[in-house]
Length: 102
Image (cartoon, rainbow, N blue to C red; front, side, top):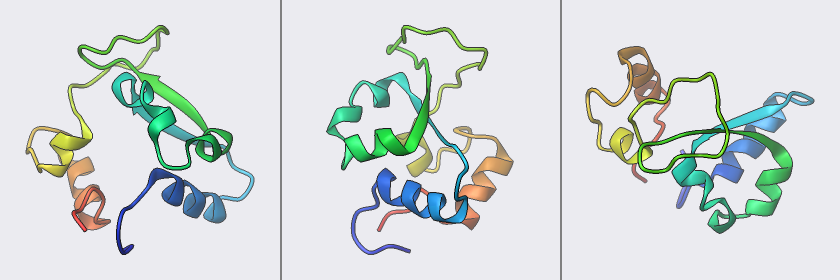
């Protein structure tokens, strides 16, 4: 685990080192994407990933996708809401200590 805050750019850089030459796709909700410029090292992040932006309730986007939106947020996942994600996803998150408090 990392000490201190965990920023998306840090995770993306680590993934990029493991998957050299591959395209990294970052899936975010419209609510998160509208604040992307406030993220830590946002300009660098924009150069490293392709964004897929999914409509979220109360935050409609400008583009249509063929992906059904689900009513879940990172806050719900961090709160360990049992119905936030499918059981297999919850198990993966727990196994890899994702969304864990530092």
